[in-house]
Image (cartoon, rainbow, N blue to C red; front, top):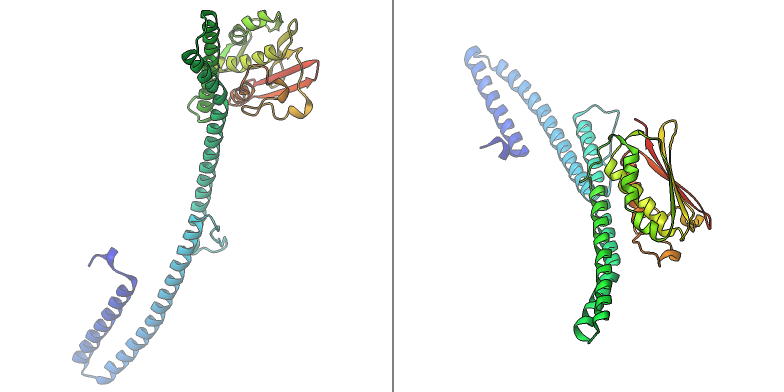
Length: 343
């Protein structure tokens, strides 16, 4: 019989039988050696006393073990149902207390895993909902344009206009998908930012290049105040992406003939990069929510955008140990301040 297949009750019964058999053999040996019945009687009495106390001990041990296993099963069931934390006696130094201590550690790990899974599930549901909401309009527009060109007679000029409109909707979908991919990869930790010493002016140039065309179209003046040859520890590519998003917002919400100013300043523990515009400004009640993913003010829905630029910019800067602050006044413009730690 294998030991792992032997139950506690059977083991106790075997121990009892073994003790009785051993006692009988010992007493028989004493009688054969001494030929004295009194010695055998005393030996038998002593054996009986040991057996009684042994029986009491085994009964207590079995009872205690049963109570412990029942309590352990209930605790594990509650832990799996997330209904209760295992009770801990921090003063006890018994084996049961050590097991309880490990159960509490297991419970904490399980709770952390549950919270992580619940957060990931909520984030996934939110992401799917956002994607569905954001892609609904351009897809509907594409279907309508495609159906019109297939089912109705249109002139060559109208066809060209429809194709241009289709291209615009495809560009919007492409931008949306690219933004979603960047955001999801950053949030999932697939992309890691690598900070190294690089010229901040090159990072600014890469960001500014992306807004030159729309800025020129609206006749917006851009001024940059950045020390030459300034080296800052940062991820140049992704910091450029964050700054581009801030500049892109500034161009979108600054009226024709306005201005944008970019400055780099040395603070005590941070490098501060300001992006200041003369745009419409942001109402105070909206300032706490503009960094949320896909959030857009009701008053700016006529302006192209999906409301992910500021969210992505904040994520990029935060992952580098920095942060973004914003000050704004309606009708006068806004200033977004990027703080990158000096290392």
